[in-house]
Figure 1 (tube, rainbow, N blue to C red):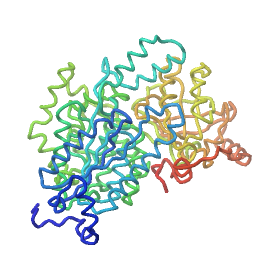
Figure 2: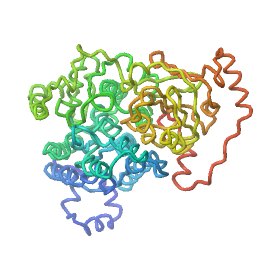
Figure 3: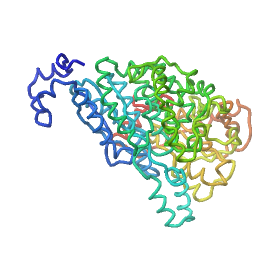
Length: 577
């Protein structure tokens, strides 16, 4: 970029009102900075959780990279929040709404003055989709920098061991020393939690979409590689400005199709079915749930990562990470999509292979006594196809979501009596109090976007899965959502939700529910313990609908009121209208 000829986008605004320059020169800018490409760095640095507390160091590295190429960085921050800290209390009702607010604040920061480029830095569940929504909305030359992955806990375990610890605590079956040991070792470093939850999934999706540098998703957050990636991103944004390669030129329909295929192959979080459609919506694109289901019928599931597999995310990155998955699936992908490197996916993969990238990382796996093929399986040796299913039927006419890659074979088809709860807290307590019997189908409703802000059911799902009497015999169904770490027959995003009168609101105790994952079916097949024909069931459900009255809820205010009044269906991303 010729710095002598470059005219920053903010020039006209500066010429209009001299106080603009005076205000910036009142900070640490000088007059030469006003002539350079001005690049907004947005991070979610803060003390909210380990995924964000280190991001200031990545911002510094990005800034150095920008300076190296003759630009001027400006640092802005909108801190995110953590599902893990919000488990089991009302704070969880605000977490999904935070995605919308973070996105809106970035739009404000990026719009009050003109910027030449944008760098986004985040690690976790809601901040990454918020950043990607903002990138799509703003359409600047943009690069995303993932915040990396946390080091494994003892015995290659992860922080989601909290489910087992919590259940045993509440049943008074654990010592204080064991609880303390988990607290001291469950999160041994900064970075996103060590399993393929929503945080790790969305880092992977950012790279799969082409908006992050190749290999940058899930870098161990304590290794030199993550700072090198951040500095390279700072240098690269200057190239994007010179090329006028903006976010919308990268975030195409073909890029989203590639990302969904990668999601199927790695066994990603069900929450991606909220976030990818929400990002696409900013572009005027529609990602229907049927598209996810169709792709999951075709793509081999090759990543052996917890919770649907065995290993933590650090091992996945050492095995080659997203580039390795793309390399193995190259016959399934559109390799001509343009990426943030300014090159096609085909060119990126060829360059990585020629540079020995995969071999260079594989050596780290020997530290754990692992081989690459144990973590990322060769396509020809894989028997599993896909990882996510969209279920439909008279209980979920618009659809519901399950990660079947984490479901045992004997629960792929299940029929059982319903036990109904109008809140997660009631269901969780029933599990703790041993009130749940094998074979039951637990229904948690009024936890959808309009009901309660669509909180995460991780605490209840983990309590269920950590109870050996129930884990392989009980189904959990909700109009809420789950953690990306959820395993077992846990069905979420049931739509329409209870708060808008969806069929889930009509279910009563001992109605018979059928879950058939291979056939993609979720339906009521009996009433009050009696099997019936489909038309008989429909008639009785209609009778109940005629008697149903929406429950009165407590007064709401602020963002919680706004979100629960305006959120779209989970099947359309649960964005604000």
